[in-house]
Length: 461
Ligand SMILES: [Fe+2]
Image (cartoon, rainbow, N blue to C red; front, side, top):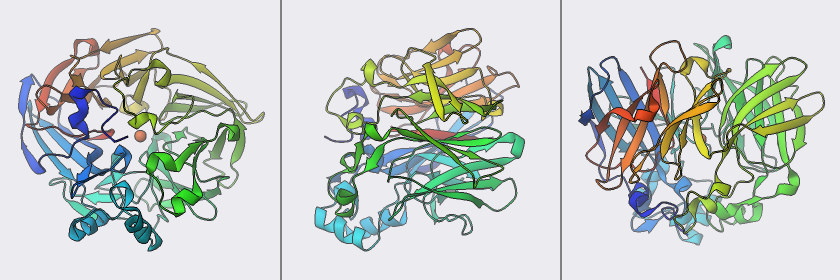
């Protein structure tokens, strides 16, 4: 098993190291970029898979690579760099991997016992208080220089963070506040919930003890509640303590535990509601809304289970329909302690996004990665009951579409997706017209190299 095995041959270079780190430089434009598109798309994903001849076994372990494409006046400039965290600097100085699957067992055990680890900083980017932050669920935020992408170091956000800070902060516009969480593993695993009111210091809303050390990737916000689907992907404690095995083998799916639903009322965070339902997994929700009678509606991408080995298996069959996530709508009844869920779309998809003004609300148009090999882009429309999809050439692969506001209507966006061309082995940001996504990009700004695997992006206009 290795990190690149899940990709078809054309796409395997996505799991190779970034070939060249650099600041902003002109990109080659194919087609025509919109004149009115002004701003920068920052993206993050694993991009340093091999160091000193040792390859990491799972992409989730690899050090982050930040890419940035700056648009303006129909032109674009691009930059890309590895996130040089303190842990990576220690490994570079030592001339060998010290942490994770790239290090010999005794080496990684020794450093684990010293309390040292490497923050991969490889999942998302977040613009907060004038700072550009690289986030992942296993570490503190890492501050980056927005003009050079150089790494400035980890931050606790002025001492507010007690530990990890997840890759998925969510904003509630009505409260002018962004929320996030982090897990702290220990004798008891603790879910720390944070609030970031505009212009005010970050504060911890509550700390919730969990029944088991689990993986938790994302959560749902409504105007009144924060909702966590705590699924039974459980850390194997003794393996973890002894630094045995790779990342995938550290988590075991234990469906008999079920998925615990934790609902934090924003106005009464010390009174969370908790109940357990059948086991399922969700990397990413779409949106949620609090309804009358203590009910909450959540749209989300649901999987029967989490299988980290599946994400790195030795096969080209990434299109296996049974493995794909599907958009569901769940109704949570807090009084009864129940969750009922129905499938909304029968096709596999991931990385859902909505018009920026509708985040945390009731969007009816959803942007996702979609297609037989999950390489295209679709815009779902609940009102029309259909989707508009673009499937690119088979050697192209698209990433999470980031909608950039063009106007107030939901479809009035530019959807930006980082595309990899497996024949040319280069990457570029394609700009799709939100009105006609099925036509494909109106223009693409191409780097002269590949940008490795990428997960999440943010638009800074
Ligand atoms: Fe994510």
